[in-house]
Image 1 (tube, each protein chain N blue to C red):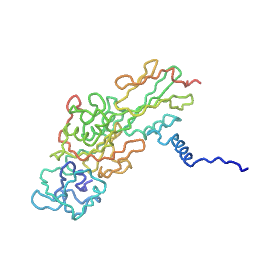
Image 2 (image 1 turned 180 degrees about the vertical axis):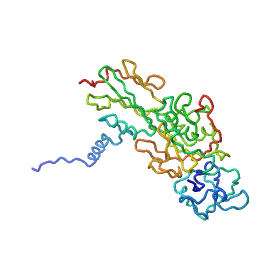
Image 3 (image 1 turned 90 degrees about the vertical axis):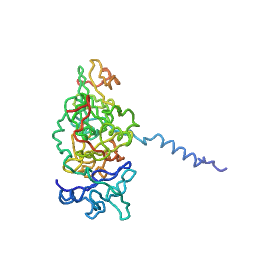
Image 4 (image 1 turned 45 degrees about the horizontal axis):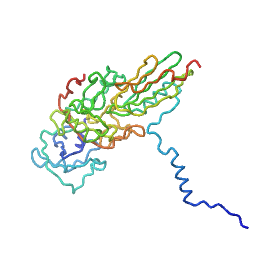
Length: 257
Length: 138
């Protein structure tokens, strides 16, 4: 799949973080626009000066479904964003979507298989279990600040732990974007963007897939169905985008295979 | 001499209605467990659709008794466990005898000769074989 994806697949801006958009030349390199992408004449694509592009002002709150639908109005306030060095999606650093290398069966925490010992965070960061002999990883484990209570399972709690583990809140050269979502006090879930531009994930010890709760391919985690009710989690809160640096590895004793 | 008719105030009816509603199962358990399964395939189907993060099965036998322990993970990232323990009947069907709702952590299970022991690092639930009522020979 070579279609160019809209920049919002990099995820929404949060916590004062600016949006980053693909330069026209990159967009052109990736061929025609995806059918879900914004109109070609969107303001965010307009180049104003070398390395500088117009982008919508960052939102300070979570992106709502209506915002993520790309309904930008002419009255939107724009800010300048330096695009040089910005990671855009999809890019060559995005991991290959290769579920067969993860889905080797097994059961949770069996201490042997990749599938049985790798959760969504491990998959998003492209780290294959077992971790320290068992199931993992949890945000904060690698940085010595593990999740210890339900109160830790929040957007801020997961985000701060993932950053402490080594993920970046801003695009990294050679890195790739991941997105997390939260069912507060219950669970979190991570998605990663693959080389095909789609987003995939690995729920717990189950196989890797790239579909949402409705069985639809995930083109944008912000708009994907994340409600696994009535018995499962409802990841109602969109956590935002972080970037996995190149050659990212969990430190010992968690270093996976 | 006119007959006297008992008049019940409307407020009493309201209180009775509220009392009745309060004892109805208005908010059932978040996780609904079937109580009977015809075979292990039915258990697999149920567990596969109930536990987002996957599940594991463990079969234990003790004399003429047999149980199947299902440990499911309803979450994707956070390590959690839910326990379901089922007795195996002579006809191959399974009856649910114990459910433990979500716990944080990874629960393990083993047969400790006289009991089935669920542990979360340390034992948290011990089911003596004497407590397993159904014999496959009956």
